[in-house]
Length: 144
Image (cartoon, rainbow, N blue to C red; front, side, top):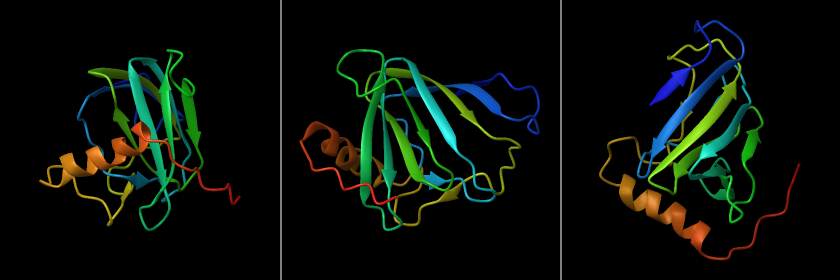
């Protein structure tokens, strides 16, 4: 569920509060048409932002929140980055900013390599992502 601070879909930038409950799933996606960056600040609770390569391999998992166990409170994703965000507490409140305008037909380019919302494979997919956060793993080198 979200609360928009912008008054129209054409307004730029879009600013909103996005409330994620634990278990909420947004299929990994990127903002490609047109390319858009996206920023998240977690104001309450904790969430993990995952970024992926084009084949669905996790590039990075960053825990966001205001408590000392978190990596940082926010993240900014470059345009065209494959990503998703998962709450790791019963509720996570995120302040989100991304360029407008919003056009549902092309806002998100969903990943073919990840299950769609409502697919029975979603809980196992979420668990596989969160297992990466709970176990030490080597971060790939930055190739930019």
